[in-house]
Length: 452
Image 1 (cartoon, one colour):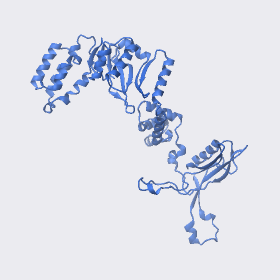
Image 2 (image 1 turned 180 degrees about the vertical axis):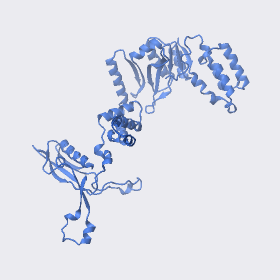
Image 3 (image 1 turned 135 degrees about the horizontal axis):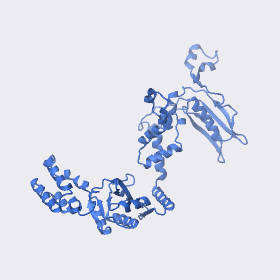
Image 4 (image 1 turned 90 degrees about the vertical axis):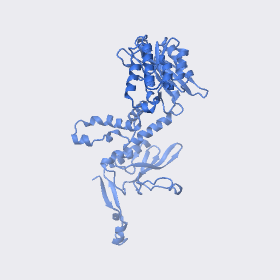
């Protein structure tokens, strides 16, 4: 047995009451069993308060109950007196004005009297003055001991793992699941199939999902107001470690970060090898900071995406794109031969202003993705129209004259000649139709910005 159960009637005098009254006043007392070296004793001393608290917490952890600090006294920054109680001591206090506003929650407090107190004695340390080991409730079951507050903690390993997950934009729920798998997976070795099925790994995690969420909240509060400076400090450290690393930034009148550009030596080398055609995509945005993530991407000799550099922008306008393109050319030393973007007017102005000798191409995916929205409703189910339009637009084997002739024939056949959007796309055909890029080497390598 984990504890000795005895009745309170053992403490009463046999003549003090009748047998009926005795049965009504008797209560059950639980006395935890543990080795003598773990049990606190009156007069036992500890050099520091931390050692004293750790000793009692280890005792509570062994016999399976939680503790909390009840009171203390300080003199000249030195704790001279402190006592710790069972977490189920006292009762829950409710304010009358809040009773109707907040949802009622059950309380585990049951007036438990188990406690310990220390007094600081100069030259001796913290000495146990009182110790009550009897509880009026059962101890935590062995299979539930991992949920005790004393057994739940976020050590440096947990914190580093949660921080890495946060940097990878992984939420607390998935972070907790990953932590459970990482810390518990190796213990599958040497157990039965039934144990594997029943195993959940919580014994090895050491914390709960709520604590993971709370730590992420505290982490966000810690960096609040200084996160941009922390990012710039990290950039400066990279620059100190590698002189070839490049970064530029701008702040507004309120000293807030508005533009950032960075590039490392590997990305710069990749650009000089594979940077004839560059994809510039701004479809990524950060929810918290409302800034646009803008990577410059290309393809290597194996058709795999490679990143050349990237930037963060607070606004999607011509001035911001012009600044970013200028930093790109300044860093690389040479502009790309062809750049692919979406149909943003600000990008078009910035390309014409900065990348003077660079061919500008629109992302075909962005253009063709709008076809279904621009077609009349009675033509949305026309598979023949989709087939003819795709054959005309996506083909790289037809000449520009043949494209124009086929396009006009399709528009006339399906009554789209006067459609405003199709007319505007035909007027801008030199920016996105493959037939008009036949003269450019390797123009078929990248047609969209989706490689980002």
